[in-house]
Image (cartoon, rainbow, N blue to C red; front, top):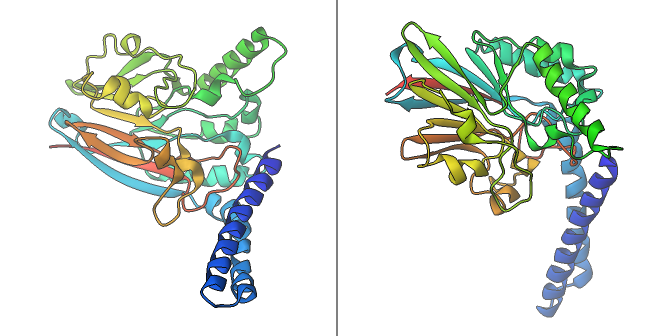
Length: 323
């Protein structure tokens, strides 16, 4: 199915380029130039989508980039100055079938950063818990001083697989949550945890998926429930969909930093522009307003389009600093 989608996407892109070539050749002919000459020269551009896809599929999707970000805050307790959070998102383990060695390389890179905390901001799987079968042991080797914290993304609810009954889907969802906990992860389902150092503390808050943008992903989360008794001096929210930031977080809460994923930056970026910018107000990187921050990770794995072109899979190292 995914290969078929990729071929259709490539044929569509080739068709668009062919139309552009024909228009340019026709305009050249009207100006007295040779139609056939411009058509022949432009025909080389028809190879671009296919060459780009081969590069993105076999090379770039296996090049894990460590993105380093520093965030300063007056609210951060002194005991947490220099606190290191590594964020990964949208692993989509099905995209690592047959690529377990690549996943192991990513895990090794993460552990080498010696994080204080690892945040996995949703979409661990694409279809269901079985994607963990050959990879659970690899992910279980993730290590951080204060542990691994995870949340649910829209794909994690197994809505994209055809189930015989709702009960089967519910059981599959429970199985995924159980397996995350078996790996030693702290799965936050509208919950929060306190991280303490000396007399200081910060709160790690995790909501189930909340989507508020111009797209129809189901909302399961409850921010008010998640922040109950979150009394840390500095608050970090894990929320999969970045549209949640403007809907409920920015200027409407005392959350200092929100970590999200979901967009993948559409897995395509040409000369710095991504089609994600047409859909999401915040789709990659760091956003800051009124002393609140949002970081959108572009993901580690892929869905549907099994390549990354100009959007390397990302491991984000966020260092918190006292301002």
